[in-house]
Length: 560
RNA sequence: UGGGGCGUAGUAUAAUGGCAGUACACCUGGUUUUGGUCCAGGCAGUUGGGGUUCGAAUCCCUGCGCCCCAGCCA
Image (cartoon, chains in turn blue, green):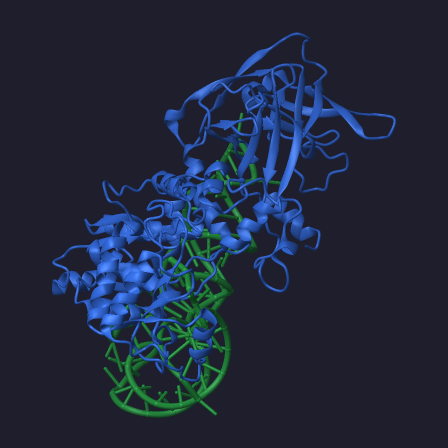
């Protein structure tokens, strides 16, 4: 591979480069990640987090973590805590700059007063229904509110009374006086403040009026002296309003830049749908290892680096796109291949008796911990007369391309001996109970002195020494590329997204630290799950499988 | 015949008037004590039409397609 030094710059970085050239922001770069604390962060947010913090990092700038908590009826501290956890976990640092929109409520109120005083806002008596009726349509202009021309004094007075709690929810709003026939609906006298007698997670009952997003967000950015306010495409239509407010107020004015949000196939990320999965118990919670939430991915075994590399790799543009979830999986595999200690584990065991091996003998055989990492060293694994191998590594009547064990066939047991299958022992129903093999003592370690080769190498564990474990084979939650297309997304649920194997047998794990991710050779990456293992069981979950070209061949062969 | 945005291999992303490149996916082959990894090679693209230009993915005109907007949500 030829090393290329050219750094690929996305369109936002190009804007920043130009700004630095022109001195627009005095070479300052200051972004923010502004989640609303009304739910858990998911992989889509990770893209935004990596973008905002990443762009600051690359430009020696800063990035704030700011909670956009302007709607008390939806927001909770629980979410604040989980969001902080998740951003921290991804490895980003906002230093002392943890902010809340609610910190600025007083200032926002004063700015609203300014707007009113300048004749740019008015108190409106219309109900939300009336307002909708007067808004017009996409193609037709709206009608002005009858209250649009109230005097400044009256507006001031009424707004004051709104704030004082003189009116019930919905009775009045503060609106910007812009243009009811504007082709952009966001400019048709949008609401600035609404009345909400609700307790706010931080300000309690201090306020009963709360700012709308468009009003609040630009002011938050302005107060924090953000340079580049990065948001998703659907806010493009809001930019004229963002700009209008800041211009009318004549205050510090960041540049809003929109990019396309992340979409992944075989995945849903809409908050409503994720909540439905949890509420209807299709998954075991927000951090279920199959969930695309950051807490779910973390529990599954995704690493911060794998997610950051993924986010970096998919790029940033204004095009709607759907990323292949394989890319996310590959990003994880790429890291784990380099770091995960290898271990032998049999998921679905089949007993093997080595008939010519002495009873009661145990040998310790050397096994490499990680062929990708010289420093990982080696370990010793016990070998004895009775072993387990993977059920699907044996076939009674194997096809030619099957390189594993079958009657009369010889394979290598990894790091151990060549063995040849001599007998199949079945029960009265004809199902295979165990198989008998002979081993070649000359092949210790896995090489034949006579130079004879075997096609296959399979994994195994010593029956006497194995640890019992339950293994959960997680797979994609959805079986359709686009679960939302055509009908109910729940119909696209993959019925096999969690297969439980209750009788797995693992090599005694000498490397003890919890939460370590192992590669079970030939199978995939696995980690012990603390929640499932809390009652003293060993429950391992599959983080991600290894690429499996045999499985792919089989699948194609079966006409899939 | 409302406004805004977007169209480059299967997917994603570069190339800002000068050889259409990269990654993933897919296919071949090689190495291999993991059917993993790694290595080599291959397949495959500028939304249609017209124009400007020595030269167009790029500039202009004109179609076509897709996404977003009518919350007192963000």
